[in-house]
Image (cartoon, rainbow, N blue to C red; front, side, top):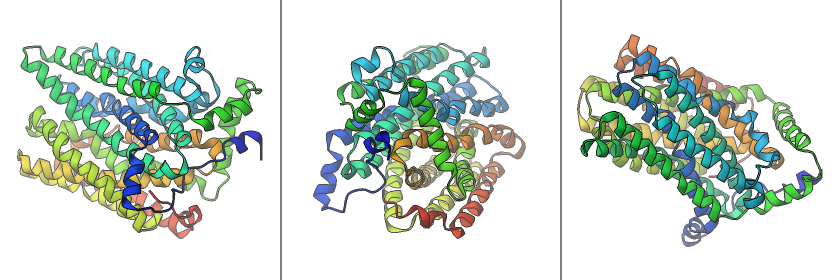
Length: 456
């Protein structure tokens, strides 16, 4: 075992033994877990600002559905982030690393750049130039994905084994809340600015300015945290190596170790496809609701209220499923549920403007998506076996998971335009079939049994 491997020995796959409910609750109140929770909120906040919220802004500005669908491509940085993940492991950021440490320095640096990117996007106008909007959204996605890389590494390295399960659950829940704040919350804020007499374009600009300010929650959290001890030890044993050597070691080791496993390519394909049904429908959900005749506030109120409750409940349900059943069985449950939930939108398209029907569809989508997400995170965590390469491997896997949202979903607008809304969401169910076929094949090959038990 090399010195870096010895220094990074602690892992995060297996949580502590079961304790009483009081002890279990107390874990969630530990300072380190609360730090991870707030960082989860900071990670979830920017995603919708270059995604669904931006699509509502564009649709209200009169942008064509086909163009809106193509904007899924601005999520490219989430797909390619593994390419620069080794840089966050190996390189020092001038001033920031010296002042705050290896992980915290990168956290503060990436968050400040993210704030600048959101402010630049706020200054664009979808009605005049989709190109400038795309460039601004691309910059937001790049800074957001960089923050994700560092937060994942910080979470893994800062939490002891007894707090890893609580940390992961808190992170996923806060991530989803951050997404809801930047969707429903942003829409309410924009409506509030409009109610004061501000023009719609300016209202959207100030809405994005408020979102940029909220990123400071993550920055303050990073400044309040302490540098992970594991990160400091790795830094100590690798400081004699050149920056190039450290980057090369992190990058090549992560890829070669993973690809040497049995059925590695099939597993990577499954990672790409598992959440595709969610991504394909999610790309067009906001434009669909607006086209159907609901107001921006109707959509925002239901997403913020019913959607939030469904998301948190679905997260707990996903944790229960992952504890109760094997990893393969849990993936089957999550995969089937998140696919079938799309039919609720087909039904909504037939019913028309009905707030109860919208509430049911949003509930079904958020509940099943949360179940699938928690189980999927457990699977990705189980695939990262080598602590020396955890950050880079996790970035690789989450980047591949973003392929469905970024590239495969880019044609969703054209499909919706050609098929109509009821048939479009039925097609979203069908696109889940390849991932379920691959799940059955991997299960038959013993892929999930080889990973061992995974608890959330």
